[in-house]
Length: 304
Image (cartoon, rainbow, N blue to C red; front, side, top):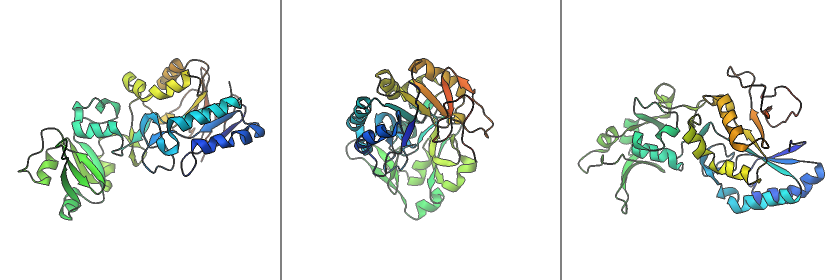
């Protein structure tokens, strides 16, 4: 069903699924056909927007979890309204809450998730999350060593962040500096990111890491719950965030259409000023102007 009128709800900051469900009668009276939801998948703790996803296969407990989501979806169905989800295939959070990313830090290129991210494997994985250089932070005592009493695994700790050491690299006779040097990763100042970064980020935001959805296995793993919700008839449409950031926007959209089937309404965020372009129309996929849908033909996108 093509939307005739959408209403966007930005979840988080106090907006939960149950609060959204309570608005359904009001939205129905307004003539809204579809609720357009900001990203609902688990994001960094305290996220105010949800675009910093840490687990694409879990509905965020912070806004009501799967049970709350199901209640909202049921309220929409009962009112004869549809649901469009905003999804983020281009990037994920670099928070250590992201289990895939944490696994890459711990196991390096031996991690099954190393291929999931757009990483230059020819050099150490750079972690530009320090306030100053590694040496300066170590001298201040801001970097310490911690061992888990149960697993016996070791990590370098920087305030509330614990960076796991690679297997087999811990030794009691090594200093913190020597342990750091033995890792497949390097902690460094955030100021060094522009020249030293070994992975693709979202524009200049080091908290967001590029995902390789052009890899079939990565696409499948990062879209499991999304496709489950579409195939179950819970979600009627998808809005694709930052499609221009992908290595192959057209290929991604073709694969998504193949996986969702012809009935899923798909739109993309498209900035006409960016050099990389997507087709004006592709098998039911329409361009999306930020927060506004144009149901007529033609291109719509962000304009500055």
